[in-house]
Length: 386
Image (cartoon, rainbow, N blue to C red; front, side):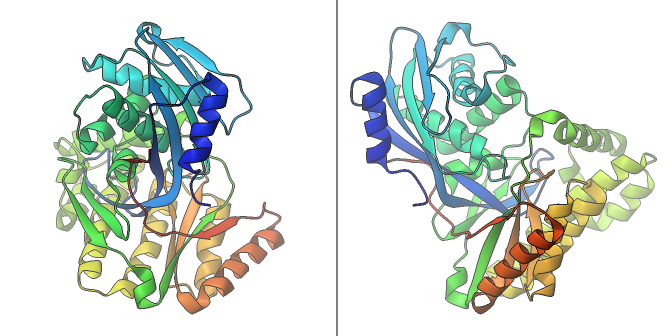
């Protein structure tokens, strides 16, 4: 089962709150095919929604109370008052849905409380956007329950603001847009400047390929400063180059731009972002041309940039990429915010089991925790289930 059933989550709600929910919604996690740390630079990304999802049973309240519960965490019901929601209050998992309520109210929407019961199959700390799934499913539920009339992209922006300003993680908008706007059988080509999207067909099985996700089980926490430091470095690079965002540095002008930068750290970050924006466009063109196998080397090149220029990889992620290549994969790279999490591996269908086995054996030989390997299938975005 890749997502909790609407019936099971609704039943959990009834047992917890003593009544049926007003509805049940789902929002998926995501895996990013290409384009890391480009979203907050107003660049390009190409994620796909996963079948793994956060599912929330929710009822509207009118008394200012917000009650939150997760079936996945051994913790009591969280009770809050909507008018007392305070950013950076360290509310643990509950900060993500609470932050959405706060962000909606800050934008002038009259959200007067809710009861929420949630269950998720998106692995936490695996770089697959478990937090965005929590935010987006909450945003979609409240949008329906309070008749807010917000479009999916607006709900994604609201969810991003919850994570930026309430939780305190300076993420870009990719994760929330992938969760809100993903489409089954497609990757999402997203321009993070204007949020324009293009659904690109991505049926690997039809061409005899498979995309593996390898969860290294190395937990990452983007709130620990590494992500924010790289964002600050990218912003410093943009200022030094006289542009609003690194998106405005053309790939063909990259070498000249790098010569103008004196800070070696900033230079590395700029090189990664501008080249990864270019890689997104390369992958999009190859997929449009039907040359899917040719994206493999682009993925591997992206990992090299993440490892050497952005320096957000780790030994486990590097081992996945190296072992997969030796076992015959077409390409591989880490995906997500880094410092742990997951890698993706593009393989021939016939080689998928062999490559997965080789990675698992390499982890055992290195003394690492056994990885979790599964196939990434492009799933549907956020939606109401019941």
